[in-house]
Length: 197
Image (cartoon, rainbow, N blue to C red):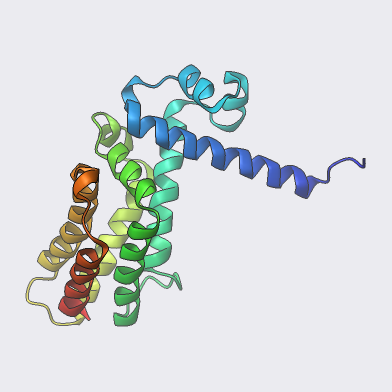
């Protein structure tokens, strides 16, 4: 058997990193970020603490990587051409894709939102570069509503954000036995699109 190439090592490393991120998200969501230790995370993943430290220097760095990954996915949906200017078609596509993502990968987003709202996480995020992604989101959205002639652009930013984030919160707190039907989520999505297209 021939030795692995650098590219093969990179693929293996990225696969392991993704496994750690997904496992940590799961454990942070179910056990709570504050209660998890690196030892507990390593045990949950079936790897050594040393291997964990090869990928992430600390539990805080791991949490930041999880949140950065989620926010980057959202920003890629929001500004796909990375030009910093939101167009009507991009806003409609963003709304559609966010709802589609929430439906198709509901468990991931329930865990993601569940981790972000935990005590101590907000304080950890303060002044971190990933917070600037959300500031960029808010600024681009406000500029869009201003260009479209909305009376109070910032109010529209709050309204749209609250509707999308509110659905995420409902998904977390709604008992699985009374799950929100997909048709209702689709109607909610259509209502939001109609408001802003």
